Length: 531
Image (tube, rainbow, N blue to C red):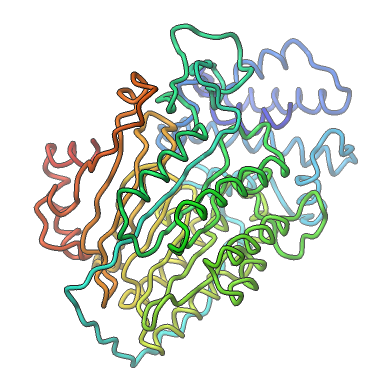
């Protein structure tokens, strides 16, 4: 019950018009929580509050930060009242039966932890600030550089496939209920069949994940169509969105099944993978290395992935130590070129372990700065892979700030960044404090249709000498058409190439910044981009 309160109700109290009386309701709600937790008694008022606080289905995927300021303030106050109640309960000796192990670990290890800090992490914004000094930290960056990197452009190109956000659902049910009223639908046993909302054979535009046969079709199509792929970037998220019923055993089965299939289909093509936020159980929870308790640790996931990725021959044995430390690694596929794979879930505000260890979790950003410094000394050019985009609202500001300091310092080395998580085919342009363009991050579109998307992927054409992205193609199929012809494989097609679509001569950060300046003033251009 309390999980439901924290993760669903808190965010949407104000949808029912409670903003003017938020403080009074906040107190009442906190009192009802305490009564329920202490005496296992649900009053009619408590039941009504929980019912009112539930997120409407149509709003479940919205970002609360886009709401009006007064709504955000109300959300923050309710969050603080709710969390304060549970902190008080634990301090007064509430049992593990009433409060789950992970919150107990946090509360017991952080005696000064407050509701304001917790809500500041989860809901960080002007309306809900994070002012705890423990969350304001810096890393050391060597700003002394006398190294000149010589870049030679060549006519030779390499091809890189970006796959991301597969979200395989083992429980997907063809003709199941695609409009079930839960966070993810089209699953076995969800409510009664709705004849007006039958789950499609190849997937569904509603909040549904990917059936197995759609995944194998996508991978097989890619292999048969793009036989000149040099290597693959997989930017995370294999596990489905049915977060309330995942398990460690179930996640392991899905992870092994998908990675085995990718290795079987792509064979000798090297794949560079990273962790998505859905990979651990529970989702988002990447525990620090010193957390070894069986039901809390993330070590099982790091060990499994290290064994698989190294066992397939994708990564060298030297990558194991940092994967086990925090899920990140670096490799040099060829002389003068380095790939750095980050676990950016370390900045994700829904990773509760940030409350336990907020300062540069697992020493990852300090390692990144040191690794880039070494790359600079060796005149190496770099690609960076990460799941959570650094420009995401849900990436903690301090982590984001320090990451951007690193990017600005080493932008002459970093030729491209590749992200996932949003499920959208999009780009992010990085500027320094003087509004000078420094870098570009390319976000891959998802294989899952979750939600209201067509399955898609990207093929990048990259210069074989300076490793700059020269162009990319987006490939997709129309899910609605595919579901009308279930006995025929989906018709994949090239949706567009970026350079041709927008008439650009190159995809440098400067060219893209100029294009962006035009796009914000041109509705037709923006419509094309968001299409």
